[in-house]
Every structure is written in structure tokens, then in C-alpha cells.
Length: 586
Image (cartoon, rainbow, N blue to C red; front, side, top):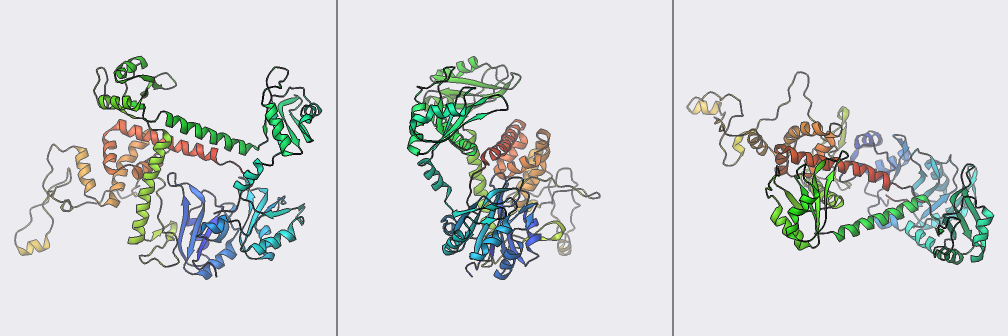
């Protein structure tokens, strides 16, 4: 058996699929060693695939045969042996591409058809968001010989109600490279409203033989202003594009035509996004080290007054105070200098400096773009997450249980050889403790004797215990330490800090989360759990205490976390572009 690890890859999962759901499914086949749903390091959003590890290979084989293409949350899952070596997946050896599939053909039907030619590692039909077939799919054979046999036998044959095309899978990068040197279809815009197909063909016929010319029209409104001309040769198409874009040809309104290689919508979006990202990078590099971020600005401060405060330190390119929709200052802004030396001089002189007329000392620092701050947060979170995983491997994480007492993971202290991915339960959101009907939630009492050099103290408001009787017998039976009252000048936060630092590290985040969650819920009630979880995972303990004391600093962190959540959701929608052809990958 080429896969002795007893580890399975489970792909094409719905975002709401969890480890518990997979455990309930796969544990019916045989005892499960561990399960891991792979998630984004920051958002904890499922990446759509998981690893299921069995104790022995026989159970893994049985699960592969019995559960492959089983619908989970309405979406058929794709199960294959876990390939630890990425070169096997990315080489393309034994991988074939099938298109023009009948809509009724799914994963199982495709697998049954091609399994006659050899052992199949993976098989899938590309599906839309509504789980409808896109008309193409992929079959990854264990050997190249089986793939070629399937290609020769099935290509051009009828499957269902359509004649299918079967060919060797070509990676996307190679397809794009070959497309750049062989395209013949030209897109042209700024056309006249009354232009016809024959007139468009007449306009381009001097550049070379034309296969077709088509003007896109609306519902009875004539031309939409653009069309397509498909040439017979690639050289003629490039010659036509170069000549049209020279500006020599114009429409009736005097607007020059534009021509370019015809692209699909997803390809255009990806290209524009790439250009936009490069533009942002260039802009960041241009203002690196010279653009200052300022906060604690007064509401009545104007940009001219702000410029006067900073003009002694050097030449100022621009000054901007951010305002809301009603024209009120948001309390922060930017000052851009000409050189990094001038900007650093302004930081040294103005940061933390009380200015006449300002309610608070001014905060001045180098401006960091959102992308850079997000990368730092991701790096910090990944480092913390890696440390948690390492400690789970060496120390042995406790067994975890889901609803009904079903165990989700079984990571024992001595990890078996079949164990592939150590299990850590990711914190998705902060869930405040809910006391039962007849029980009030209390923080576990902590003996002050575990604080080095600290005196025994009685919790605030508590009664002092009665003095213990003297004598050996009394000392054996009554070992309650006599706690001294805390000084009267201790603040509530000092009491809280004393209690906090006396706890074990695993209790500290729970304790501080109880204080933090109600404050976050006042600001953002709908996502209070997510934001609290983000703060607990990304902010150091000392900084968390500072946030509890400083409402303004806490509001800033809450706003940054809320914007990060919005950006993640927006970017996820923008990045999930539909691709014309996708390969079988894990």
C-alpha cells in the first residue's frame, strides 16, 4: 500500500463543516485518531478541506471507498489519500481534463466511468456556488499509463447526452503563457451606436483574414458600443490591435477606438486587481517614512493650524484631518513631510507633547498602511498559534468533547506513527460564561502564596478568618493561612491585576475576557464575541490591562478589529473569482 499513514484528505467542504460533524461521519467506519479542519490563521474561516487520521490503514481504505462523494451540508465531499509530498500533486502526471460534460454527470458517475482504466487518486466535477455542474471536471490517475488509456478510449465519445473532450491537464500558468502567444480574438470598444457586423468586418479586413465579426447589441437599442473580431492568425490580430490603439481611427463623435485581446470577465478582474495592488505598493513605498499619523486631535482643530504646529520641522507636502459624513473631525489625521529626517524630527519633538488648547497630549508616529498592520497581526498570531501547537505536541493535549459527549480529537501523550496533524481547537469567538439557574459564576479562588514575595491577602470585601488555635494538633487540622487586608489605597484595577497575575496562564485569558466582553458589547454588540476573541489572541496581557483602564484606547482597538473583519469579508468576495478551468489540488 503506497499510503501507510492512514491519513485522508477531505476536500470540497462547505464553510460550516466542523470537526465534530466529520467525526460523527467518519467514526461510523472505524476509530478516528484525529481530525483537523484547516482554517485561515486570522479569520478562522474554513479553507474548505480537512484531514482525517485513522488508527489503521484498513479503516482509512474503508472510509475512502464508502464515504467518497458523500454529501456533507448539501455538498459532495472529495476524499483521497493525503499526499505529504506536494510535487506529486503539482506535477500533473496522470491528470486528465474533461469538458462538455452533461449536467447530470456528477463526481460518482465520472469516477465510475474512468475507474475502468486504472486506480484513481482523485476525481471531481467543477461545481458552481449553487452546486450545479460547470460542464467540466478532472480525473487524477495513479499512473500516466492509465491516464493515456482513458484519454484514447473516452475522448470524443458520448457521455450522457453529450460528446466529451478528454485531454491532458495543463497547469494554469502554462495555459496563460500559451494563450499570450496564440490569441486571435480582438475586443474593440467606443463603437458607434448604429454600426453593424458587416461594417465592423469591413473596418478590420485590411489586417488579415477574419473568421467572424460581431457587434454586441441591446434589446432594441442598437450597439452597446463594443464588439469582437476573430482573426485567423495571431499575427494579424496583434497588428490590428497596435494600429487601432495608435489613435488614427475614431468614431463619429471623434473618440478614438480601443482594441485589445478579448478576455473573460474573471481574467479582466484578476488583471485589474493585480494592477491596483501594484499601485498601492508603489504608493506605500513612495511615502515610506515621511507620512505621519496623528491622533488625539481636538474637534475644532483646522488643517491650517495643524500645519503651523508642524512647519518648524521641515517642508510639509500635505496635511489632512479625517472627518465623518457630517463634517466632524474623527480625532486623527496625517502630516506628510519631504524627507524621513524631517518626519523623525517631528516625532521626537511632538509625540506625547501637551499642546496649548489640546485636551490630550498629541500622539505622533510613522503611518503604517492597513495591509502592513494586518500582516503584523497575522505574523504575531501565527507565531502564537505555532507555539500553542508545539506545546500540544510535546505535552499532550487533553481529550476534547463535543455535543453529547462525543470526542472530537484523541491526541494522546505518546503520539502514534499514524498521527499526521496535531490538533488544536481554534478560538473562533469569545463566549462569555453563562451561569446555571441556581448557580452564580465565580472565578476560581487563587492562593496568594503562589506569588513570589507577596503577602497573604484577603479578597476585597471578604471577612477575615478566625485566628487558628495554637499547638501541633491545631496546625495539622487547620492550615487556612491568615490573610492580611489589602491597603486602602489599592484601586479596583490593582485588585484585578493582583488576582490576574496570580492565576495560571490558561486562566488569565478567561478571567480578563469576562471583563473585556461587556465593554466590547457596548460598542459592537453584534460581533462582540469575534472582536473579544481577536483582542485576546493578538494583544499582550499588559496591553489588555491598559485597554481595560483606557476607554479611548479600547475603542480604537475595537474599531480596528471591526474594520479588519469587514475587510476580510470584502476581500473574500473580491478574491473568489470564478476560473475558467481549475486543476485538482489540495
